[in-house]
Amino acid sequence: MIQESLKNSLESVQATRKRLEDQVRPTLDWATAELKKVLADMGADVSEPTTLANVVAQVREKNPSLKSLARQFDVATYDLRKKLWWDANMVTAYFSDQAGKTYQAEVKPKIVEARDRAESQARNAIEQLRELAQKLQPANSETDAKAE
Image (tube, rainbow, N blue to C red; front, top):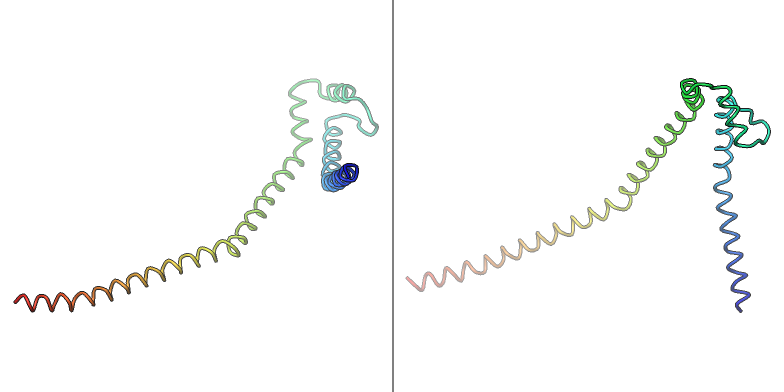
């Protein structure tokens, strides 16, 4: 019983891990490719696996001053920064559009229904007050006539 429960839990964890990896892998591959482009633009040879110290040494060799390093970094990351900026704007626009659609489809009808219900109840209350006032007016007229 416990072994079967553990087996089911393990299978569930493995399936979740696989699904998560399938979702994250394309993004990691894209980020790796972009990092390699930036490092190549900075002057590092990343065609073969190498150590971080070796990459840093290559970048320092190609960019001896801080000014040249900053300029080269700006040039190397320009396209990536613009792409990330564009993607962020598009994601914002997408979510804004989705929020608008959700509002129109789900929230607005509930607000309209609540408003209509409140207006109907207010009309009924006003009508009842008018009827009560009409019933009280003849009674007041009769008591006024008797008092004279």
